[in-house]
Length: 338
Image (cartoon, helix red, strand yellow):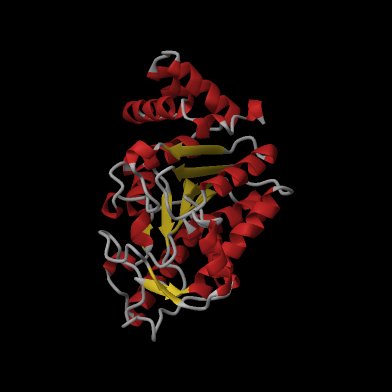
């Protein structure tokens, strides 16, 4: 086991050396590895979003590392590279989904050498890839965390453009705080993730998934909330240990929900929810039953014990479920009403 850790550390060092040789846009795009000198009970593999970089998962990665888990946040193929990228010279993003699927399978193998159970998570298209792993290889994944997964656009008309146009597109928020990735891309590079999202919706109806947490937000104007709910409902029918949570619009948590530097002032709520899901073995029905007891005035001690959380985290989660329980989006996916 010590030799495995040593070999894996050498692989991680080689990966970072290669990044230094090819040149990155900035240090924020460099792969982040938080690894203990030994294997751990769980190892987290986090996948950043489209045109972004590993910086998106640094806060949650450190949180899980501090809980005693090993954490891998690799830079995805074609991302974060230094260059003068523009309409006539777009960044070198793959238009073959196999490029990303092979990438995550390789990193899954690496992760398996660092922990007994693998947790995979991702934001946006990274969440779509995490969902693919959870459905394609459920026996290898202990938990899957899908943060605002890209299964379709918030505006279905944009999906039509993604399917047909070969044009270069610049993000509307390309100059927003914390945007360390590419400012634009060719549409076919995103199309492959839209197609993968559609495949997931079909596969989830007939395949048992690894337990899956889907985190959404009413303020997300990038991806389809209804399709995220559809995916959850299908996954839940065959995997009762899956959870869904949608942040209320009043919090103004937008699509880039993982960090404060990307304008989410409530990043600790995302981390709290992820910790609760990873460290508990509750079904969705049991989780909702706990939530209802909280609303009825039960103390935080019970949620602290049953979800294996510290006091602050249990108080945060208590506030979250109390707020969410009264919302129509939360109740519409109650299994007792399905």
